[in-house]
Amino acid sequence: MFPNIAQLLVPLQNGGGGGGLAGIVGLIVYLAIIVAVIAGFWKAFEKAGEPGWAAIIPIYNVYVMVKVSDNPWWWLILFFIPILNIIAVFKISIDVAKQFGQGVGFGLGLAILSFIFWPLLGFGDYQYSGGSGGDAAAI
Image 1 (cartoon, helix red, strand yellow):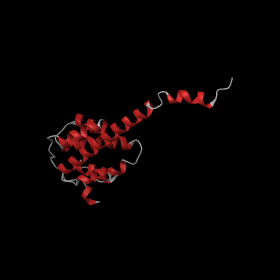
Image 2: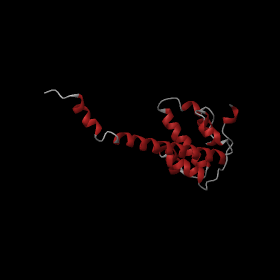
Image 3: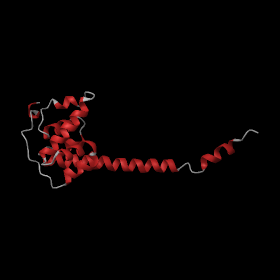
Image 4: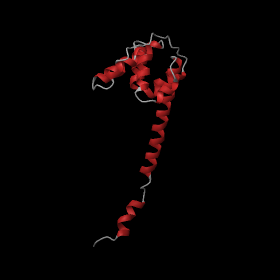
């Protein structure tokens, strides 16, 4: 009438490892995407005359992106305000694309599909047209 412990464990022994494998594969894909985005940031920052290592420093990388986009430094603050941060991401991404001679569509790609467009920008033949750095140098 009552199952013993061996009968309870039998279903757990059959096929329980598939979820773990899926998790490992998902983790590997996630890490590959993160590495691609960081590498794209790194190369794009170097093209813009900024240090590539800035891509791996939280908050500072956003400051450098604001600087590369030729916007004032205080746009960095907008990244910490809900709703405004969404607008700021799109505006900064479009401005970065324009600094590299690309249009609004590429800028939207930087914001929405960053794992594709940042490596494209960093490793592609895109040249930074340069800007005054906005007011970013004043910080």
